[in-house]
Amino acid sequence: MRLRAQKRYAAPRRYARVPTPRDLEDFCDAWFRDWTGGNVDKLLGWYAEECFYSDPTRPKGVAGREELPRYLLKWLPMNARMVWTRETLYPTDGGFCVTWSARIPVGDETLVERGMDVVLLDDAGQIVRNEVYFDMSAWRHALRRS
Image (tube, rainbow, N blue to C red; front, side):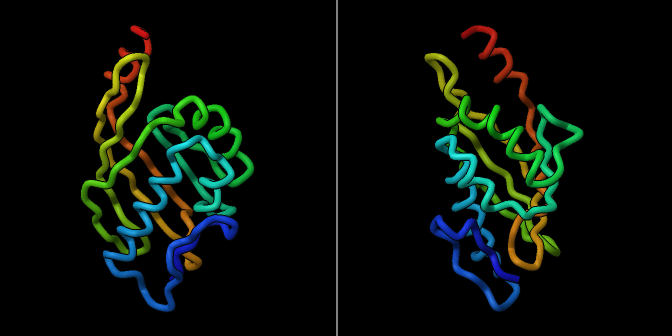
């Protein structure tokens, strides 16, 4: 399995073997960095053509590289200053689960939220399934205040 990102951006090393836990941590850290900054094209490079993505705002998810950009183009630029940090990564057969913390600027305050992603990778090392889980209550409350 090889882990890769979109070719025009720096990609993690490619692997001719099954990735080690350290390889998956490096992949996750680079992928999380690309969630910051609002660059949808850069982020899409991590996802396979036939991917599935869900999060608390889209619990039924979005499918495919045609639908995912439409969602990300609305969401990512509004949240470009969020910073995601890996806490613990648990390798699985075909991917990993990762707990994370996110610094989320809202108005004059910065929330720190914790959550978890389930990530499955294809044989080329691209994300085919990404399920995001966290409680958005504090974030929604902060948005109402700002």
